[in-house]
Amino acid sequence: MESQIGVLRSLAIYYAPGRVRRLQRFYAQLIQPGDLCFDVGAHVGNRVAAWQRLGARVVAVEPQAQLMGWLRRFYGRSPDVTLVQAAVGAMPGTGTLRHDPRNPTVSTLSEDWVAAVGGDPSFGGVRWRTVEAVRLTTLDDLIAHHGRPAFCKIDVEGYEAEVLRGLSEGLALISFEYIPAAMDVARACLTRLDTLGAYEFNWFPGESHRWASSEWLSPAGMAAQLEKLAAGRASGDIFARLVSVA
Image (cartoon, rainbow, N blue to C red; front, side):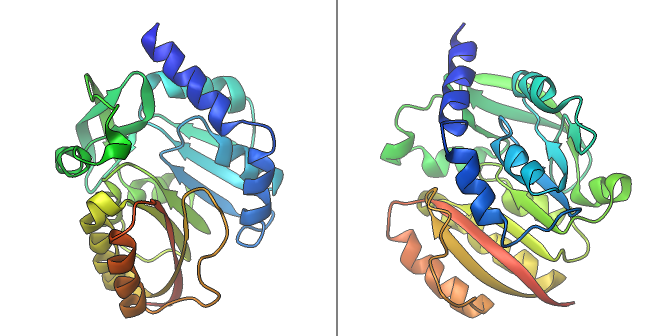
């Protein structure tokens, strides 16, 4: 019952009136009809809905069994959406997913991330009480099975750098979450991307879906910006755009 309430809360938040439309407006500047997009950490699929409206083909990856059940209800019959029940990491195998039934948004495979955010007031109500064994795949394996995406969104609560470790070649456009309480993860993502190609960066705080900078930053510029963001309280998303391959 507790987990059902948690999922229903997520559905109410992420499919609130106008939310998918706002996502659609933002991603329209990045996604073209026919593009293949990976949604790593699809949760309840509101980005899938927005990208579908833009004419994209979507591979939605989500490890939580209950959330995958809802994704199948919403998108299981769509020819443009492929659902993959798995977590994504550096190597194929199995992993231990921790989550709070009341807050399924913040499931994680990273014990270090749990420790890092444990003292943050914004996570004060979260209790990672449920443990679920999940299948692990990699971005390289997903690419081998489904094709090379024009865009890959990664939102996996502190496991973003591990996801990028499972990618051997740079992708045209990648996004990943940053959280001030665990900014080492974002720094590790920048370091990993530097081995895959020359990238430039932009970001937005919270759920604003408005670029924070009028210009895309160099890796050094983004690293400096991370130090400023670490002093704040707002999380957000960083976008990495490939300029040239390694």
